[in-house]
Length: 248
Image (cartoon, rainbow, N blue to C red):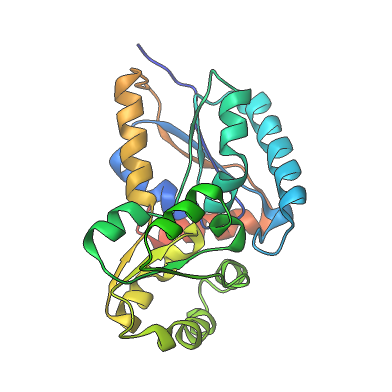
């Protein structure tokens, strides 16, 4: 059965473009929409109460306007704060969250660094995992996502920040788990800097999306990507997508 309702991606900024790119590569024959919550970017320094209220209202408006069959929260913080609420509120829509890939990391590595915002790390599921696995250490660089958002093509600024932040961890860890989709833009730099495996949650999200489309027979007859934002943020989103090798 053909289902041409869109798949909606949501993030605070350009970070979720890394998730979108991975999903589009694995599942290209679907109509994709992407919205960046630029008015509240960055999420890292916002209060939990304010973010929850804002994200709920924004997604409500997007659902009313675009009627998606699937919503991908391409943001670890948004997932931690509202995915359970959204699944209960909108039972006819499938919600896919993005979470730090801690479980596959602990199966392979002994000393793991989780790099994420405080709102992500404070999530009960993540807290329980970090308590369960004593070899997981956490860093919460609240301004890193903002730096990446605004310096994607002046990489030296972000690289210098990451070097100062992460170099003290060198030779003390054997894996880094990225708990923010913005960080994926500098995944390769972190890998070169620390000479360890760097894992993000995008593969899991794309695999989940593919399985759901197959299970619920959501094949579409239209495809493509549309960024919903206008102005400068639209240009940043397109540039971010192209930086992964995507095509206009």
